[in-house]
Image (cartoon, rainbow, N blue to C red; front, side):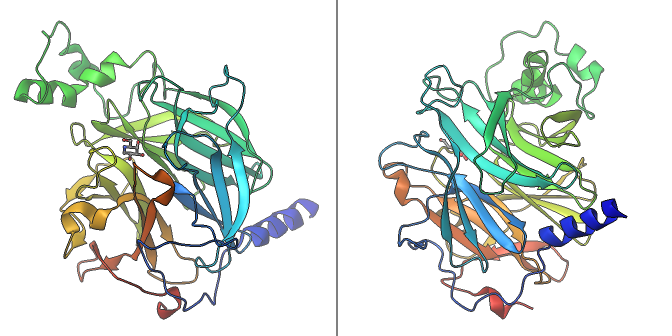
Length: 374
Ligand code: DGJ
């Protein structure tokens, strides 16, 4: 009985059936001041709804460098428009031996809540200080409180020595003894599809760069990340406590060169919006759908329409938020990077629209408001 009461109390605390919101406009690309009047500094981020409050976690960016000198910031809001600065949720460390020492690269943090353990779990892309983008690690931190402080647990490549569900031993064997291949030739593309880089990294674990997290209706969580030198996406199930990988994973769109994965589910179909790989410069978005998160995934044309659709209106996807209490409102969130002045990077938030066939698309809107949606 006591257990049941705790469970109900826990579920109520997590409830996110929010309404009303606000008719204040969302204006993509502009300065978004927080409660202190400072432009929100939470890039490559994602949003968690917990206890009727939204929490936005993202990368703190400095004036001149895109590296991490502060850590992961957190903001809270009741209406997704007015944001309160909650401080640094995960701080970089002063110890030069620490994997998250000041000056490392810490990107695309996402936080999810584990109902079973009552813990908040943060995953992010980590590059070790001074080593460019070669480490390609997934890192994890945990907290009892949503706003932190998060305790850094560690980092690594993903699923070392474990075969992906859609990789055949036969394909890997066919790569034995291949001569050095020139990139982007048909022979090289064929070898990458079969697992050229996958095989290279098999024992040590798969590379993990741009990433997002997704918690499905059954409570299972997934880590979606750019792997194999950014040539292939991986979708990997997390363990029940969300602190490690379960070993169940798939490769998606090998040779597709996808970054910046973002995902949502509508009417039983999973939709994933990604970008191409052009550094900090914007490029055309890509879109995929699947009826099972582990695939197979089908690619669609660029979901963006209208002017600047070929560069995602200047942005790069980071997260898609289904808005609680608003049927069919899914907010596509993207970053407009400013590599020469990273702190001035801006945000694009647009409502995803759906064609009669149910296929999502995006159009630029100078401004729109959440309360206008049913
Ligand atoms: C594009 C990625 O999406 C960003 O997160 C960042 O890693 C930049 N590349 C670095 O060039």
